[in-house]
Amino acid sequence: MNERLPLYAAEDTCADGCCTPARSRRAALSRRVRWLVAATITYNVIEAVVAITAGSSASSTALIGFGLDSVIEVASAAAVAWQFSGSDPEARERTALKVIAVSFFALAAYVTVEAVQSLLGSGAAEHSTVGIVLAAVSLLVMPGLSYAQRRAGRELGSASAVADSKQTLLCTYLSGVLLLGLLLNSLFGWSWADPVVALVIAAVAVREGREAWRGDHCC
Image (cartoon, rainbow, N blue to C red):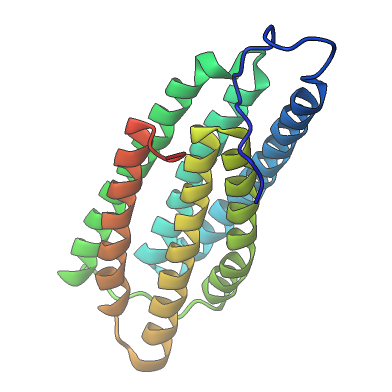
């Protein structure tokens, strides 16, 4: 098991270059986090455009909500990218965590409102092949990105990187919910399935938001 490296350890406690390997490892992990965050942002921008376009075409609040969730994820990942772009990530970590927490709360609020409206019969969505394919692809892509970022963040000791990885993991759950909802709606006409499970996802988002706000993700 990899030992978690102190992200902000003092450097003046070592002599004769004994800290060079640890310092080099931290630099490598920081670069890895930046690349993973860049990949997450790129994918989510594409995902948002496709989901919102397909959702508008099919009158699907679930697809539109999924696209807006991607926008929220971009904001979360951008907060981590901003943190690690500076020379002193420690000074920026609390701000980055607050942004991630707020993005979780915003996601939970939106999903809850849309789910309740769907349960109250705000309109039936049409079949969307594009939406089904998008949800399936996201279900395959997001777990790998989340795992890689969470592993690097934990070894680096960065609560914000771990928090953002959980935002990406939440997208995996939403992808599964979206896929299930679209399939059940297309195959059986069960329009209630998606909003019911979406409410569970909203509850998870609130919990993750609270942890990010307190900075508990590395504990």
